[in-house]
Structure formats: C-alpha cells, structure tokens
Amino acid sequence: MSHLSVQKLADRYRHMPVTVKAALAYTICSIVQRSLSLITVPLFTRLLSTAEYGQVNVYGSWQGIMAVIITLQVPFDTFSAAMVKYQDRRDAYTSCVQVFCVAMGMAALAVIAIFEPWFSTAFELPGWIIKLMVLEITANAAIYCWFARERYEFRYRPVVFLTLVQSVISIIFSVLSVLNSSERGYARIAGNSFASILFGAAVFLLCLYRGRKIFEWEFVKYILGFNLPLLPYYLSQIIFNSSDRIMISSLKSSSEAGIYGIAHSLGMLLSFVLSAVLNVFQPWFFSRIADGTAAQKKRITTLIALGMAVLVLGILMAAPEIILVMVGKAYREAVWAVPPIAASLYAYYCASIFLYLDFYHEKKACMNAATILAAAVNVGLNWILIPHFGFLGAAYTTLFSYLVFEAVAYYSYRRILKQYGCQEELFEDNWILGIQAALSAAGFGILFLYRWFWIRMAFLVLVVILILWKKNKIIQIYRQLREHGKL
Image (tube, rainbow, N blue to C red):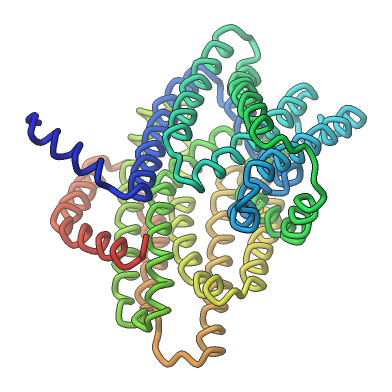
C-alpha cells in the first residue's frame, strides 16, 4: 500500500463521526478477540484430555447460571437505561452498581462456604473452584459496568485496550498454569480466573474513586425493580444455552462434555457473524416499520437468511477437516454433532427476526414464554436422550429446542400482525421457513458425505464461488442496512 493510500485512509478515519469510530474499533476488537480464542483452541485441546476439557466446559456453563443469580444481569440491560435516567450521576451509579455486585458476590461466597459439600456434589467441581468462580463473576461484573459506562460516552480507546490486554494476559496465565500443574483442567480455569480478578479489582477501585458512592437506596431500588422480575427470563436463557454440557457431564462423563463442547463451538462458529448482522438489521427493520416500507423490503430478509444458510453449509462441509486441524483426533467424534447444532444457529436467526416485532411493539410476554418453553423442552429432552445417546442426544435436543423457540416466535409474529391489522407480510415466510427445512435436511445428508472428502470439497468450492459471484449484492445489502438503519 502506497504512502498516499495510507494518508488517505488516515484522513478518512480522522473525519469519521465518533460513533462510527467506536463501532469500527469494537468490531476490530471483537475480530481480534475471536481470532485469539480460535488460535488457543488447538493448543488447549492438545494440552488437556477430553475429560479435562469437559471440566472447563462445565465450569463455563455453571458460571453463566451463577452470574445471573449473583449479578441479576445488572451490568447489561439495566445499565443503558440508567445512564439516561441518572445522566448527571453516572459515575455514582456505576460505583454503586459495582458495590452491589461485590456485596452479592460476598453473600454467595458465604452461602457456598456453609454448604460447600452440597455445591461440590451438585456442580461436580471442587469447592475452591466454585469460590474462584464467584470471585471471577464479581470481577467481570465490575469490568462490564465500566465497559458500559465508557461505551455510552464513546470512550472506546480504553475499552479496546483493556479488552485486548486482558485477553492476552488471560492466555499467558492459562498456559503457564496448565504447564505447571497436574490438574490441567482446573489449572486452565484458574489461569483465566486470576486474570479476570486482577483486572476486575483494578477497574472496581478506579470506578469507586470516580463515583465515591458505596450505597444509595434509589439506585438499589431501581436495580431490584427492573431486574428481579426478569430473573426467570434471564435464567431460562442461560439454562437453554448451557444445560446440555452440565447434563452430559452429570449423566454421562466429563469426556463426553468436552467432545460436545468442541462440536458446539464449531456449530456456533458463525454466531459472531450472526450477531453482527442482527445488530445492523434490528435498527434498519424498526425504521422500515416506522416509515411503512418493511413489506416492500422483505426480500432483503430472505437474502440474509439464504446467505446465513450458505455459510452454515460451508462450515458443515469442512467440519471433519476443521476438527482434525484445530483440535486433533481425540475429538473427531464431535463431527457427528455439528450439523444439528449448526442448523440451530439458523433457527435462532429466524426466531430473532420474528421476535423483533414483539420488541418494536413492546410485547415481552411471548418473548419470555418462548425462551422459558424452549429451556423446559431442552432440559426435559436432555434428561431423556443423554443417558441413551450421549452428546449426540444433546445435539439433536438443541436443534429441536431452537425449532420450538422459532415456532413460538413465529406464532407471536403472526398474532401481532393480526392484532395491529397489518394487511401485508413483513417477511417472505415460505422462503425463510423453507430454507430452515432444507438446511436441516441437508445437515442429515452431509453426515453421509463425511467419508467422501472430494465431494465435500467440490461443494465447498461452489459455495466460495457463489459468495464471490454475489459479493457486490452482499455489499449492496449491507450498505443499505447501514444507511437506512440510522446507525
């Protein structure tokens, strides 16, 4: 790249609005984080046995559940609204929220210390690991609060810097811990936790110094009033996404939980792409509803759905090779669980776009019902299928649960259309649901091709050619979403 080109890019960056700079910085940061995570997967899967890797997965699942109970998700949904409500007292609110999370964490530690044998048995983890989990959750809450505070005012540089530094330090701590311990699964957990606790403590002290507020009843009342009623919803979401690994470890073995964890990571590999698409699509869709043009633009939703399906098929075709290169032969059985999990990702896309109409009209009851029902189906089927079919039973349970989630979301979408007297369809339902059926069927078909390398590679080349052929159309759709989404 020439000096003039670099100068032109630098000038363009300097003249960008701060909102665009922040979005660009967070996107690049997310890509770097994901890349670091992918790079370390081959390292840790070769340093850890499948059972030890299963311990890490089970720890992560329990951590998600405990985080909801301890923090009430205060650093997330409530925080942005509070930044508006208390715009002249943002630092005070931030420090108060962090102290609240620390107090909840200390209370959890006290309960765990009293009933440690019970928790150890239920979690299938040593007591000291469970206590470390609580400390990590508390530290992460402090970091997330600070992130939200900085992001709200577009101070993206310190957020990006701390995120990347913490990611690197976490990897270093984890590798050193694993190499110097005989209990390598727990060492992997401890190394990552120590990094989070270190950075969380520093951020907590900084925010406490800025806000100088330990307790204020108005803030606490606001937190409890907003988050406690949503606790069943938050827990059902986490259980929906995490119960499979816990139940595999409990009903089968940690080794199978480790293999399933790899399958789940690969099946959901495109989740960050989907998140980026939905983050752009939501404001665009809301704008189209507001100006009455959503029905005329429904083909865009179908093209996005088709694009997601093509990308998922590409991952499915290369799954055996990705697993062999990334994690080695010890995890090769994971490939049979990838197709149903990957098809679940598309179901999540469909459910999300259908539920956006609920969000737009502030109809949260069906959204809560969809999540709770899907979580109940997930746990029930896992309880029945895992003892007989192991991690494969959990994989197909995941797909079925997401299809239930999608079905309830679709029912809610149709109900709201009728309630508000909408005469035109906002989505091309037949196409979107037809792609779901085709993708699920293709997933089953691809299972029979996993022993035929060249056939799969030929199909993968066709997928790449299709993406390159339609790249201008893809870029055009993305630009249209950004321009009309008022981002």
